[in-house]
Image (cartoon, rainbow, N blue to C red; front, top):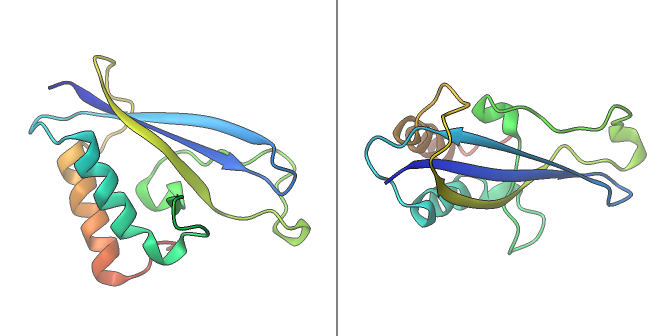
Length: 116
């Protein structure tokens, strides 16, 4: 099994989108669906819609995708959305591997603080 590529996006108040992705090393062969389930559980308290996993990428040490004129006072939201997860042969772009990411997600569930 290869590394995991996690796609996410930022959507501002005007519905303009900015896309991004991180690649995590996957030495233990975690399946994409398993990681998605962990992300859904970790961030369920912050989901704006039942079918959208909303999260703060900074909580995972991932780049935030805000636009230059990001402004919470102008109805912009601090959430990013999980788009998808797939296996890839691409090299990792994040220092946390899939197993460490799963542990971090479980910690967020335990603390029930997805936006810290």
